[in-house]
Length: 348
Image 1 (cartoon, rainbow, N blue to C red):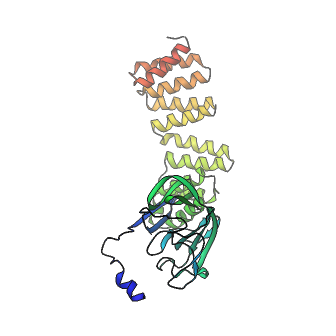
Image 2: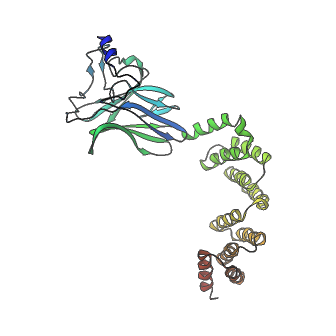
Image 3: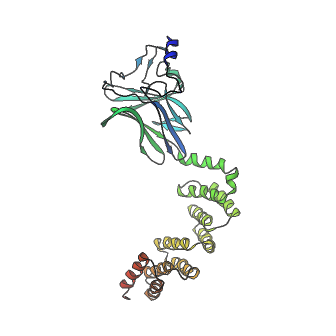
């Protein structure tokens, strides 16, 4: 019997029919989920309860165990996790797993991951190799899928839902990663090597910590090393952000003052508007005034300074700033903004 199966197996160098192979993958953070599977067709058959029997079923070949559905066709459907994940709430180590499903007549079901992923179908399924099992709820869907397919229809920062779609049913499996922990652990290792000699990489890792509200101790080490390699506005701004996260606003302000000489016109303009958004009008005016001193021919710099004065209630200084902007042949959006404020101030 076994020799017959081997003889009739499709050679690996020829196209697979009638259930062609496929692979689908999804990145979550820097982690990857992939599924390698075969795609059977409905072909007018009754799938649920007939082609795919309900519940657990004793196989007529192999170990003869009661087994779940192979979740595809041909060999095991293989789920690959590049990092440790939670699958339907159960922690699963990184690796390759045989993916199996159970469906019951009431649309209750199970997802099973087996450490044995090299067998053919469910014939050699053995529960002792299970890495995890979890209950799922199978969905009835409106769209008909002639060929079985896997998709990732819901993806967020830390999670992707893997969906098996066939006929008019969908089998959802929630897969979650601790993305921040994985990213920082990876960065820690990577930055021990050559990438750790580039200020941009060190700054990027430190900034990730800031943006994701993580512990700043390692971030401060990274950003100080980045500044040692190449002091610039970008990494000094990141250092200031770390200091603010640590509650030291005074030190953060000092770092930003020291960073200003390194700033480009856009840097100064953006920082000025950031301060305006915080209603720190005197500080914003100082920054935007510096921008006009460094870039006196920039209509946008003068327009931004005028806006800062206007928001601070300083009509006397706002009007000449806007008029200076208009004298420099500004682009249409800048011109419109200056004229709008001059009308509001009764100067046009």
